[in-house]
Image 1 (tube, rainbow, N blue to C red):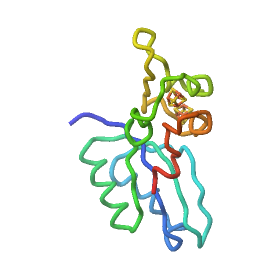
Image 2 (cartoon, rainbow, N blue to C red):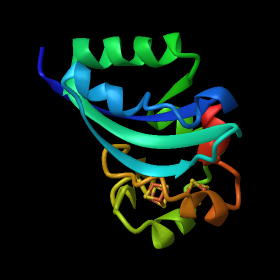
Image 3 (tube, rainbow, N blue to C red):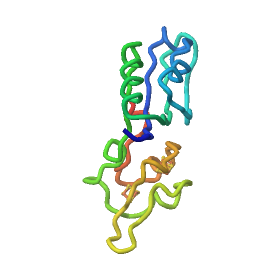
Length: 140
Ligand code: SF4
Ligand code: SF4
């Protein structure tokens, strides 16, 4: 099985907020990159991160997080971008810093590349059709 890269949102209950749960992910031979985190001791916390590793190790690590009482949401294109609501206006492409949102020049439809996305949330605020879900909402 080859190496995979996924983006996930995690919701930590207050009692887990200051525990070294995330650092334990190295035990699953994963590399990870924290993109955003709101963690305070004694409060519910959220974290968005990119995980890279073999598919089986990724599955085991997500099972570990859930066993620790952490809610996990794996982000996919359809979790974030609602094609039904999108009117292909292109407004989001102007604010995207990573090139994750581009207009296809032949079909003039929006294309979303989850791999390139930094989960910054600028597109959520720019979209007049509410076709991009807030990443925080998508976590939970
Ligand atoms: S969250 Fe940021 S990087 Fe991701 S698609 Fe939206 S604007 Fe681009
Ligand atoms: S701003 Fe919203 S409606 Fe416009 S292209 Fe982007 S996702 Fe679609």
